[in-house]
Length: 345
Ligand code: SF4
Image (cartoon, rainbow, N blue to C red):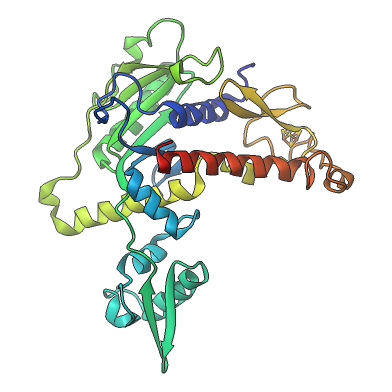
C-alpha cells in the first residue's frame, strides 16, 4: 500500500503497531515469568495537556484493574466525575459528608453527581432534601505506566532540532514514565548526528512499514531511561497533583482510543474507504487515489461528496450506509481489542 497520508497515516500505523506489539523487543518493560508483557495496553492518539500534545499515548494497565474499570463504562471519566466516583462511599451518605471539600461551590458537585447517576457511575437517593450517594464499586488503581511517543516519519536536521526541545520538555515534566521518538527506517540505522541533541532519557524507535503494519515493523535504536516519578522534595500536593493529571490522561486514553478519527473525518463521503495496510485498516480516498490526511478529509474538501440517501436505506450494502458501517466497524474493533487486553486472551 502506498505511503501517502503524511504524519497522520504514520501515526495510525504506530498506534496499531503499539496495540499489536508493545513493548518493543529488547526494551526494559517488565514481563511475566513466561516472558510475555505483564501489563495490558490501552493506546490512544493526540492526547496531552494544555501545553503539550503527544501523537501516541500508551497506558500500561494492570489487567485486573482494567477489568474493574469496565464497571464504569466505556466512556472516559473527566476530572469532575473522577472526583465524585473515587470518593463515593461504600454505604449511603449525604454527599457533603462523604466527599472531601472540593475547593469550589458544592452546587457544581451536585451537578456532577446527577451526571454520574445518569451514566450509572454511582447510586443516589433522597433523604428529605438531602442527596445521598453510594458507590457502585471501588474505582480501581488500574494505571501502571504512561508512555508518550512523538511521531516524526521524516526526520531531517531541522525537525530533529525542534523535536529535541519538545522531548527535553517531556523529560523535564515527567508526566509520562517513558518518552520515545518514532521515525521511519531509512534502510540503515537512523543517522546518529540527527539524534545528537536528543535527551538521552528519550528512546528512539525506527519503523519499516514497507510490508504494512506488522509486529516486527519496529526496531529499537536507543533505549529510554525511566523518567523520575517526581522529585520527593516536591511534597505531597505536587505529587498528588501529578497522580491526578496522569489519571485524567489515562482516562482520556481509555475513552478515546486511537480509532476515533472517524468522528472528525468524513466516512460518510462516497470516496471514503478503509483499506488493508498489513494488520491495519487505514482510511483511503478513492477520489484522491491515496491515503488522505485527517485535516483534508472534512466537509470543506473540494471533492467531498456525501453518500446518496439511497445508500442509507434498503440496507445498502451495510445497514445504515457505508459511513455508519465504517464507524460501527471501528467501534467493534476497539471493543474487541479492549476485551482481549482485559481478559489477557
Ligand atoms: S473526497 Fe475528501 S472528504 Fe471525501 S474521502 Fe476523500 S478526502 Fe475525505
